[in-house]
Image (tube, rainbow, N blue to C red):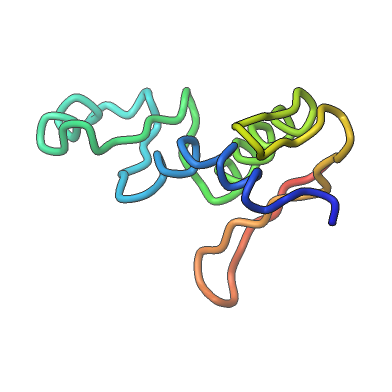
Length: 103
């Protein structure tokens, strides 16, 4: 076992939850204020970019890489800093369409 999945789940829980039941939008979308008026607290703005699957894969990759680099601890669950590196993140649109990001 390289990383305890429970530790990884705890480390990512808040970050991943923001994607659930949210409308992803470009922070510079001219309709952003109108959208947020109709969907208060339900938008997830992406700073200056359209939230494509490729962009989401990159954002998730960067976040998870940071956790793996810096480490995480929550009670008995721990991810030691710098022990594991992330290879890639895959975000699916449909069963046959996805985008991957990796370094």
